[in-house]
Length: 238
Image 1 (cartoon, rainbow, N blue to C red):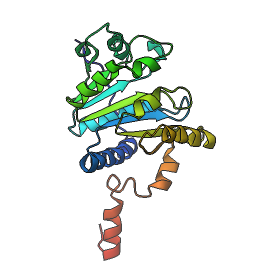
Image 2: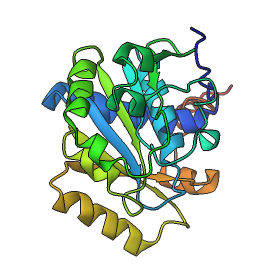
Image 3: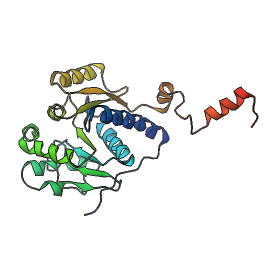
Image 4: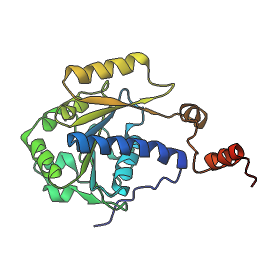
């Protein structure tokens, strides 16, 4: 079977941001044995899929056996970034149309497996609540170090809440300048009311100037600011 192409991100700043998330998830895994994480937007268009792909790839690149699951069965494949060559997926297994081995796809990123959404389903909530979904969880928990669920926005559908209550933790994605404050509060309250373990929010679509404001020394090593300051403080000439 042809491996699915997972684009490689070479942006230093973006990689630095995801390295921080990887570190936090690594700590949670060590301290609490967390391995399954739901990534979902507050509102449609927040960029949760982009975050999910980059996060899963970063975890896999760190040596962890990782699976990324596209849990949005409401959106047609032509709108999916990775599903062009993956027609059989999660919904097909949940409807007994394919074995679980057939819905797992190898990718060009080492240690990363991908499970596409499968056939379009108008209302997938019942499938996500089924015993077959429990079988998926058990199968993946025994085979992978990290399980990343890319789910629809909380304020757009109930799907994320259904999966979040059974996952170890949930991370909301919001887009700076786009996601409304009410949207963030509503999504967080929905997850909390469902007893999901909401551990934080990733702020997406932040520009370089804003990022550097939050992280003054984000290019600490890349531009050797520390070395320059040290030499100046010690009176050493280059």
